[in-house]
Image (cartoon, rainbow, N blue to C red):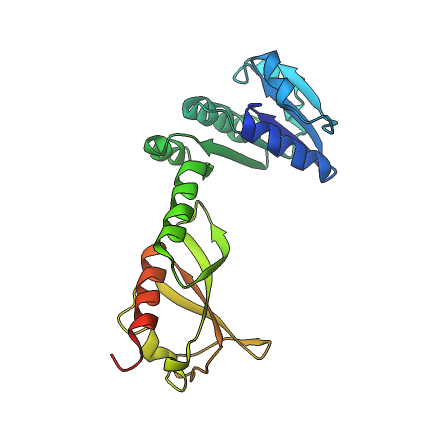
Length: 220
């Protein structure tokens, strides 16, 4: 597939290399030619120097034949402008914009763009580690607002129904229960067993509440 990466900073250089190693055709665009020095020696794509908001620059990068574009500069306004142009005027199928400043995230979302906020996502991951939550994240959606987490059922909850565990716990939806290596879709009447692995779709607030409920014990 053909991809365009706008911005050859640390994120852009790493993304370009990963796409290239996956067998895709990659074009990197940056207004500063020296930025291309960040590209790994294994990078085999093309580079285009110039302003990414320029129609001529985008066409030199092959935007008409592009399957996807990622705007990952450290300027949220530039990312929004380039991503909007690619999606609306060139009908690029997949467009992603990086959010650099969390306070400007709503501006990017106003353009109805797929947005990745590395600052917000990173801060949430650090918070989870510091809070020592008794859960393991296996899948993250969006910028980490919703995640699928796994928790191991302790002995104190053996024999109790799932409904009791989730009572008064908001923003937490059970999606699977794994027992002895086999997974099933649990119901509220499912009786928990020691060492069951419960997978839940949840927010940070939800998994925090569920962890506290587990720690409090079934008799509370």
